[in-house]
Length: 299
Ligand SMILES: Nc1nc2c(ncn2[C@@H]2O[C@H](COP(=O)(O)OP(=O)(O)OP(=O)(O)O)[C@@H](O)[C@H]2O)c(=O)[nH]1
Image 1 (cartoon, helix red, strand yellow):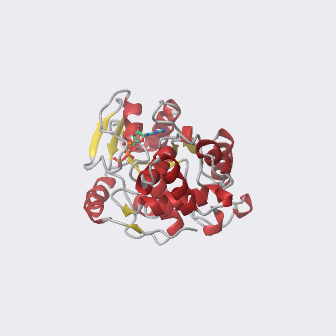
Image 2: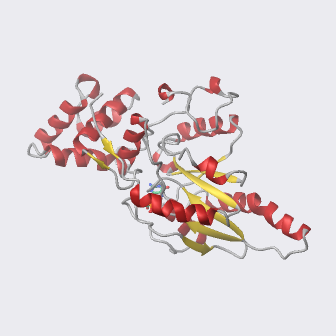
Image 3: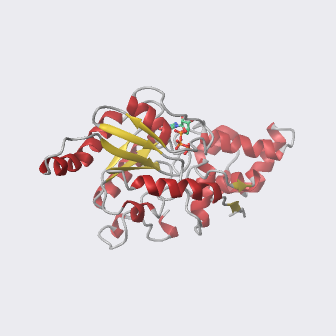
């Protein structure tokens, strides 16, 4: 595979993270948002520890960017591991009502405990957590039914914690994207860079796009590249694919070709293309945490 380096900048996120952890004490329910194209790579490994025993609602967003049969496989995989993922497309507003109900259900125990102690019920407090750019703010706007927080194509738009009341029953906390202080898994880092779910990371577009071509070829997504660009990625390295594209369409401007390749994937122009598939169901029932991959070969 082409070589690439992804430089991690968790510094400014660390500050936001401290505030977030403070707010988490006030929260009843956690909505963890994953990118449906990379559900394993976009799971933050520290979230289970941060939330402890609080109920977690698992959201697979960007479902429009993955074929339905792959989503179905993910659903089966999560359910077999004792989790129910809620499938959403925050851009088009799909799956939102079901998610609201799931959040209310998850928070119902809070008010039950309050009633038991003779206290008045209060809105369930939920936080929306996940990597940068997975669609947390878009999801909140959908849940509220109007634009209450900033949502944009670039990562790192949400900088501050913001509480939003979505009904008399639910209050939501919009949090900046969180990324782990280290990401040792290079393949996961690459996938996050390709999907732009990585925040203010620095990486070389040319290397990342070349690696993407090779990753798509390995995943059997040859047709999407062949039909859009006219070259068979199995017949060349990612780098020669990129150079060929630059020569044929971008006056040999390799950087432009690289950006275009990444943009085509990120905007969904290549069609619904997943970068991960569920690990073999054989691993179900193991003692690993629900989202811990069995090994790098799983995806
Ligand atoms: N195709 C598609 N695009 C989406 C979906 N959800 C969000 N987006 C788009 O993805 C981009 C990022 O969405 P945001 O809601 O700003 O993401 P975020 O997780 O809040 O990002 P940070 O503020 O960086 O943490 C925006 O351009 C959204 O319109 C989805 O389900 N499908």
